[in-house]
Structure formats: structure tokens, C-alpha cells
Length: 631
Image 1 (cartoon, rainbow, N blue to C red):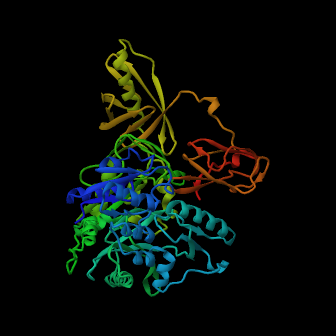
Image 2 (image 1 turned 90 degrees about the vertical axis):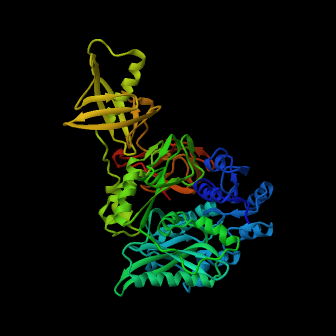
Image 3 (image 1 turned 60 degrees about the horizontal axis):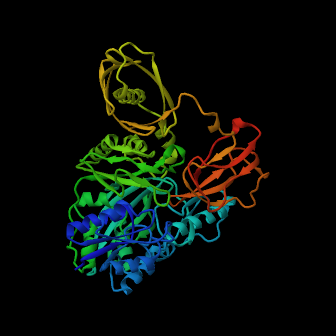
């Protein structure tokens, strides 16, 4: 029996495993880097062991340190979580060689499937060799790991070498393995996967299907189970292929077999992508539909327990949305800072590695939480999830919350007409500003009431007061006016029914509108609208030249274009500087053709958001477009 378990991971992943361990009476051990010293997963564990350093390569990717931590803490088992070392056969062997129980498949199964190149060979699929123009478009892909890291779509042959280098660097940083390969890029397909669970006695459960087609940067955003609209014969084929992968590797434990489903002249076709030899981030939707705790089953299987002859009967539909600290309107740039509040209605499941007051840093993935809704039908589950996200309180850095809500309500999703190109087609409309015009007024009134607590209302009518706010993340600016009177507050365009520092009620065209207001310094959250208070006049010292390249997020400079020096001629869109933030590499390109007059970026330099990286003297300032996109 397992009595004490170390999770070789962090954040939401570790917290999720710890929750099941508490239910089963198993003592929990966390490991942490220096930036994670006070992280939620550390606070949630019974014991914690420090891994000195900050980057994944120094800490969570050090198998030797993690194994030693388990021994030092007296753990008798190790759960790898998902990510980092979870698909590393060498780590699995190191755990078992140390006399510890490994919560995962045999190392031989990991070796067979953890490398996507070897997995394809096992399934009879060969990667591309030398790429020619006729092969385009192609996908450069990391052989290890997942989560969209180390993946690049290449549409021009001249870009292949650069994208290979970028993919290798990102894969090495995220997984400690820089191996990449190239395969044909299939556009317009659906990403469908099968959850498998196998015991050591030969039983295999095929737990339905999941659709994970809504992705950005090849990383999943919204997932659901079962995958909607699949014909029974296609589901049968997917299950047969998944079971073939399990049987071929003598697999034991939880795993996921992933496919790309495309429409062709002969009907839908399933293309094998890979097998993830671990639990997936999106496993909660399968748990909800089948009424299972997959982590509990992982532990039982590791203890030798056998599965029943058949899995539980699926019921209803489940949808999961990943809440990220990122700005979808700015190339999904990661955001950092203090998460002041994170709360969702009790009607949905929240899996998170953060709580109120935690800091979101630059070293790790930008995912804040997963929000999951389950209902008897797909339509009901989608509606419930969208409504819960709309009512959620997410106060702090910019997030993708609005994008999630709009995605869930988009006809292409509600009608199950989605594929992996969903955001390529719809991102512009899904990130169009659509703010409540009365939110800035509510923020100003709440602030005015708070100020009046110290000075009191005037006995005579005052001159109108003006406040300026910038709505985040869209950057639109609003100016509102109000004034103090003998009877309280008056505002343009609305009657003030009630106003306190935290709650404002306005009557507009005969309807009462209610606003919850939370203020954190110059940031104000009004219902689901985030506002930044602005000074009445712009500070001239904050203005930048048109060709200034600013860091779109905090991060580390990992590359500068070869031979780039001050005085060099650059072309519009030419990649100049690469930043790494939250395990993703982001490219900073020249905003227009011109001459580089200043270069402040140097490899290894840590920069904050808005830091001046370089200046390009451009011929026509009207051509300038500030860019900071994922590489």
C-alpha cells in the first residue's frame, strides 16, 4: 500500500494529485523551485523539498534531484504529473531503481511512445525525410513532451531552418530534449483523442472520446467529452487504434491516444498523431462523464488492483476551458503579476494551482486554472460553462476569459463545426472590444464614495469631476463625468441608485444595472471588466519614438538576430530579438524597414513588460506596427 507520495511537478497538476491523495489518506510531498517556494502546491502538501534554482532545467527537469527529494522525504511512490519528466523513461527507471513505486506505465512503454518519432514507427507511419516545396505546409514538432511547445507550422521552404532551430530551443527548455521531426501539416482537421486505462492483468478500458480542436499555438484551450458528431463506426475505429497502441506496448496505467480526424471523399479519416504516456490536462471531462477519479485509479493500478471487465457507463457531456494569464489580442502574450482574486460559481469544477494573492511569474506555463461543467446534454454543459466564466471573479493580470466565453457562444462551436483552425479564422471577431460602457462610470463613482469617507460630501453642488480609464486588454480609453451634490452623486447618462466603494447600482433607461467593484491600486475590476485608472494628462517622458521595440511581456532575452548591431539596415517584419516567457519563445520583429539606431537587448538579460529593447529609425512612421508574437 502506498502511504506517502511525491508529485514530481508543480502548480495545478500537483494540487490535483494531492486532492485525491488526501481522499485516500496518503501523505503528500511537494518539490519546488525557488520562485515556487510559497506556491499553492507547496502549501497544500504535507511535506515540501526545495530544488535549488529557478528554471525548469535547474529544478523540475532534474531527475536526480527529484528522486533524492522523494528519498529524503520518506516517500514510497512518485507520481510524475503531466509535463516535465512525466514521459521520461530514464526518470521512471531512476524512480524504480531507488526502490520507489512509479505511478505510470513501464519505462519500455514510455520509450516506445514518448518519442513521437518512435511512436509513429510503431504504428507504421514514417516522418518526412528531406523536405521539398511540394511537401509544404509541414509541421515541425518536438519528439518529446506536448502542450504545443516545440511546434511550428512552416509554409515557406526558406523558413524551415529557422523554425527548426526555434523548435529545438523551445523543446530543450520545456522538456530537456531538443529532438524534433517534420511531418505533413493537415489543415482543417479535428483533434480527437481516446482516454485509455490499463491494468497489469491485461484489462483495458477505452473511456470514450474527447474533442480538443480549439487550440492556440497548437495548445488546447477548450476540450469536451464525448467528441460531438462522430459516427459510431468512426468511434469504433478510434478505439481499435487506441487499443492497438496499448497492446503493442504492454501499457499499464492512464494514457491518451491522439488523432486528427479529417473529412475526405470516402468519409472521415483518422490520422494517428501520438500517444501521451501520462494523464492529460483535460482528463477532468472524462472523469465527469464516466464518474471516475483517474488519479485514484492510477494509484490502485500501481498497487496491483485489477480493473473491472467493463468501464462505467458514460453519462451526459462535459466541457473544460483553460483559463490563461495571457492577452489573446496581442498574440496570446503571457501576462504576469498578482492574482488578487480567483473565484467561480460552485456549479462548476475548478482545478487550479493559484489562490488569491499569489504571484504569476515568468518561469512556467501561463495556465491559471481549468473550469469544467457537466450536464445531461452538450448544449446545457456549454451554456453552464459560459455562464460560470461570465460570473467568475478573475482579478489581476489580463486573461483569456472573454475569449473563452465568446468561443463557447460562437455558432461554430455551439453547432460543433470546429477544427484546429478555429482561431485562425475567428480570432479577430472574438477579440473585438465589447465593453460595458457604464463600467468606467461605476468605477469612478465607487472611487468617489471611497474618497468622500475621508472628506465628506460638499454642502453645495460641485463642478463636474472627470476620470479616465483604459479598458484591459483592449486598450480602449473612456472618460466619465460625475459630481457631488447635496443629495449625493450625479452622473452623466445614468441615475445613481446606490454607491459604495464596492457596489454601485445605476438606473439607465429605466433598468437597474448592478456593478461589483474591486480596487487594487490603479487597477479596478468592475464585474468582468478590468480598468486601469489614467492620469488626466499624458506624461511626455513616457512617449516613445515610433520605431521603439518594447518587451510585450516580462521574460528573458534568449536570442538576438545573428550579426545584429547598431547601424544595421533591417526590413519590415525581420525577426530581431527572441524572448522566453512561461516556457514559450516569443519573437520581436522590426516594425518597418529602416536602420537600427539602438540595441539594448542582450542574451540572458531579464526584462520587464514595456522595457525598451531596440529602436529602429524608420522612413515612414505611419508604417510602424508594434509586434511581439510567439516565435
